[in-house]
Length: 410
Image 1 (spheres, rainbow, N blue to C red):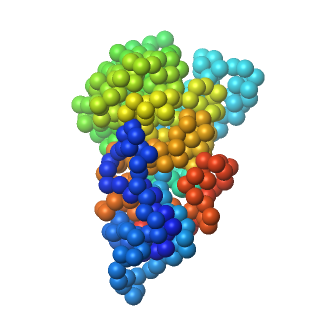
Image 2: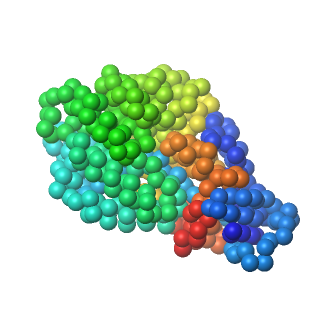
Image 3: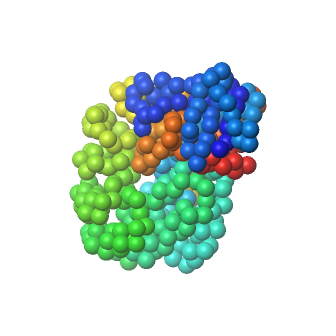
């Protein structure tokens, strides 16, 4: 048992698995609160006046009037990669576009080349340190995508590393096969053959070893078509692997619609959205997920999340932590971008970065909010820090103490 007392404001108090539209701003808060944790999960919570008797041997954290939030859930990362790509960053500063860098062999293919010569242990060590870094800024659950292997063996290597990280770290990790991130070099000019290989070899091999929870496709201009995306999602469904989609980053690609049609758990990026794509998401189980770090880093439009919320949709926010287009996994910063650039209210940004992003990786029932039975992943803010201060003072880490599965991490 662990008891936290004298919480000035306990945010995210909802039993729901996701919140949509105007309800995203109604994520309840309890003032002058306590919370009791047992067996790694939330056992009870409420106002201090109703706390009842605490067992004499129970460890207690006196929050001393500090704010407590549910930990962030980062539903879109590429946190396993072999090396940084700052040379390409400078190329973009000089005027080259993301697509131009990719066409000349950079970007994803560059990372794939280096990954092929990087051992699993090296990948594990570097990703381990990155995850420790995002934990310190409040992330308690994250999805890890493959996608820098682009062959059966290399994609499985990445996913084995992700499973090792899942076993060794206190964060909750979900894994996603993203073989359809780009076309591997050996299949240059034969994209159809590469898609067939994913469907007939890669997905079955990954499923046989239980290495992935989801299958993702980069359905966008210059990458995979809607027809190819549907073929991959149908192949994944045969192995009970739900789909996720990279969609509408570079163009209105039809990726949203093919994702909805095939029951994708989330469609991510969404920088380029038209009314048809927004309408397609209404009354579905697919979570639209914005990646504001990529918009910020690449200088491309931000996803129109304010419009989507105003039209009644749920919205999640994730980091897209990767070496090419969003080399940052700080979810406090992602919240700040959601508020500053996308005009979300801080409480809406919190909902997007916790409850809705938990849903976007299949964890809505167990993570992302304060509810009895949910995992006790919590952040205690520093003295004087408030929810509104996180986006306002966006350069700081506002978290003092991290609790994951009821265990104090720092």
